[in-house]
Amino acid sequence: MMDMLISYRSWFLSLHIMAFIAWMAGTFYLPRLYVYHCQTTPGSTESERFKVMERKLLRQIMTPAMIVTVLAGGIMSGLPGVVDWSAGWWWTKIVCVLGLMGFHGACASWRKSFAEDRNTHPERYYRIANEVPTVLMMIIVIMIVVRP
Image 1 (cartoon, rainbow, N blue to C red):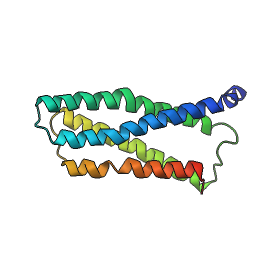
Image 2: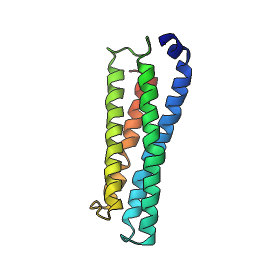
Image 3: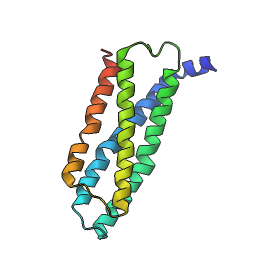
């Protein structure tokens, strides 16, 4: 079984990168939708449109992409020779991935608040929150490519 997984390593890596790109695209866009949603009146046509967009982005793109990213990455990290488990870059990357997953959970919580017309955060909050995944993504890419 391990030999088969090793022979498909490049495919897992490709799948991992594509899923990560999709996850990050959604993670960049969803907080931006929240900024615009803050500018609408609860119950308005515009507010209801944002609710649909936010739900579909989170459930149909972001969450499946996150799951595939984690599964493909997990499979690769279990292959012999792929990860030096004593290297600091690896653990930094894992912490940042867990941070992204936490941010994903926060986005889901915020979406639920908007869906129930009970958002309490101003648009500035989401503008600032929108920078968090960018910083995490930068650290993740540096850790995996440069491996300092």
